Image 1 (cartoon, one colour):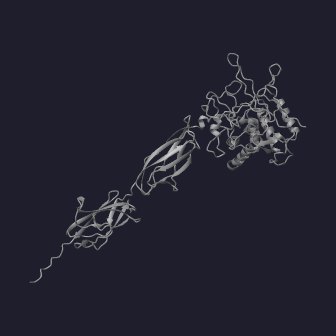
Image 2 (image 1 turned 120 degrees about the vertical axis):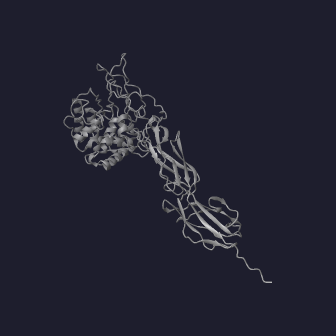
Image 3 (image 1 turned 135 degrees about the vertical axis):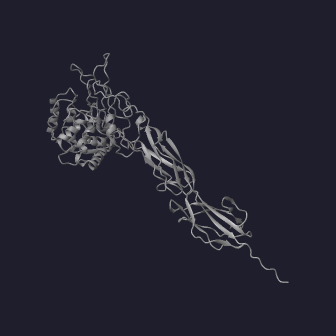
Length: 570
């Protein structure tokens, strides 16, 4: 039976010879591995050519501790075997939790579509995930791929680790003094701010989500035009993740192991490593030392705890009893994931003519509890009112995801046919929703011109109907003005447009005279007046037509005097 190598490779303490021996032992088991590049076999904390995944030379993890367990000497299967072995096949160490394995493979496909020249293998992500977090603590993730509680490294306070002061206000790592590595792939917050991804489509870039973290790691490893099928580029990529030769050798060992074959196991049942690298912290003033982070739990099944770290002088500490597990507290969303405010993102006055399109679009900006913009936040916009106004597409409610700068902009508004006021409300957040309301209005259609379409004189005898119909055309900026309200008023004097009490008139449904009518132009901007009638009062009268928008036309009407008849002869 092959024995597992359980060597603790302490960064800065284990010699190159020990690491070389471990890799030699792995090679003896027929596990293939790409060769290490020249310059990668030196001492600890070495980089390859000074290249890193990010814009600076800092490692993605801040060089925080990692697991140093090596894979079994017996590889999962013979060369060329499938990497989709059934759960019951192969070594337990070859089993990768279902969601975690799915995340690695999805990241490989995504990167292949956007950066095919990188040739990212998912097995490299699996190797890094194994070394950084034991595949998200054995696959303890929910249905969306998020760990039930954050996976945090120790404070990078310079006490045995790198010194990295806080860069995120504790939003990701809960530490507002120093940064900590976060999540299944152990990104420090400053690196996550640049490389974070939303791979599971939930609208958040969450370092504690294995899908988001795996894709971020893939893109980080591919930075700088690397081709990960080339050994030198792969070494540089891994060293940019954690600047340690021992780390490179450990990742390389698991990479080779997973290339030989893996199989899927249920989430939460993965095998946990037992030997994290934990450099001895530097003494602090007063003779105390900063605490050493506790190792992750041993394999499922209740194996005995491994001996503690070697004491100075060769002794070992006594095994620490395994604590009784307690239910984890319900995680509190970090400030970066908590909606703090919703503000106007520059929306101007919302006014449009009936049937037209609003020139302004409603826009808001979401900020988190730290005041930073929130991306990928669902914002719902709702129109309330009776004007008939709708968003483009005929909807009263739409939901939009905010952009990287926190802004969310609703589709264009299409004004209804009824003039009046209405509101648009933007709502975001669930636990403590934020709302922002905008006032808007629809004005009636307008015309800046109205003319009669013919010039015939309008004359009628007393008590008769005017024989010629009156047709007019309204325009706005030279185009036909459809649906424009027009008021027709019969007056005695156009200079004093007061409704007359005699002379020509329209007739209502009851046959009674009407001398004022509200009318509307048709689709072609035309307006055909109802029949006009003369009464018994001869004279010259005027019909004044005024449009919404102020255009006016005056039409003259004449009621002839009754003909005098000769008296009958005696």
